Image (tube, rainbow, N blue to C red):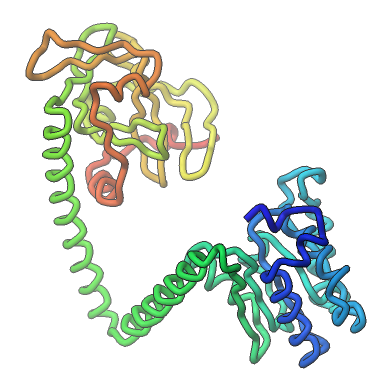
Length: 359
């Protein structure tokens, strides 16, 4: 894909995808000279190349006086293609009033952009999921608006992905239509039925994963405090979130076994907040931290403060370790799944609000 990011415009002009983009835009503005067209690309570097190509090669557009703008995210530096929020607002205003008629954009405008006269949306070598497809297609607000996806031959898998997105969109539309036909009582009954099925599936998946863990490693470990040898939880209750957070699905850690102590301010990341609360063993050892993952509180174990004792052979002990990756040699690691989240939502105890506060 980076071939389309080359700065050599003479090479870019040979690209069938870019020439197809030029043709689509030329025909659009020939039919409707007051059109507004949004062109979505995947990366910032593509925006400048596509604009330069259209300005220098699309004679039909320049002859018609069509103005082209570029809008990207405001988080990156100017050197890497970012623009300020003020520049973003100015470009969007110019797009609305027609001073700019073609806006080349990254995903920053997929949501929330409302331009009533926007009647053409084009995704250039950029296909993600059905949600993004619906969002970007929805930017074309004008009656009779068109939606195009341009995929070069060497990236035909993107075409397959877009067709899958369209199929999923059709299924979502059908599902919403069916839900709208239900009475309030039928809707509540349907939700309760699905919740029951999800709980049953969660139990089955936990049993399957536990069996798989035994088959893969054949060992379940007691996780103990290195300070006093107290058993804290067991390895089959560990789940990994976001490939790095080792969370224990053990409610007793938050009720009886550990004592919370606020130590620092919270830090928030995507779907995850470190609440700045230490969870202390009765010996005073700081064995875990209280965190929030997808709005639920969890104890996150500290690998340096625990050890792993083989339940079937107590003489086999691992730890304390410096990093979690060292535990992969003997420990079965299970990813956090939806079924785990559902089960934990039912099991998690009440946590004092002052500990969950992000202040």
